Length: 118
Image (cartoon, rainbow, N blue to C red; front, side):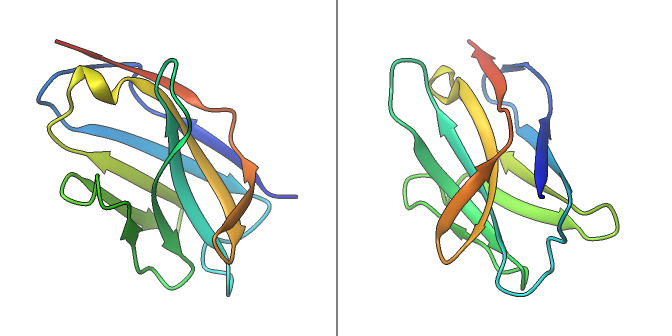
């Protein structure tokens, strides 16, 4: 059973780069057809899909974030990382990593709160 655990700073200053790590257990991030995603939920708003890194290492992002977001992976540690540059208070949210395939992500981490201070 796959499990995901997000980690990173709870507080980031505006204009800095946010970096979050998702540690994966119970599955391999390189197993064929799997995909590994980042999703966030700002306070009082709906969930927002941010981007994905499938098993082959390619990356895809939402159009609204692709200029600031990147996803990388460390296959030796079985983890993947989100970086978001030039953050603003509007990037304050609970950030989740999720696992799945075929653009469906049924398994999520518990989420990590990130607050951007102005």
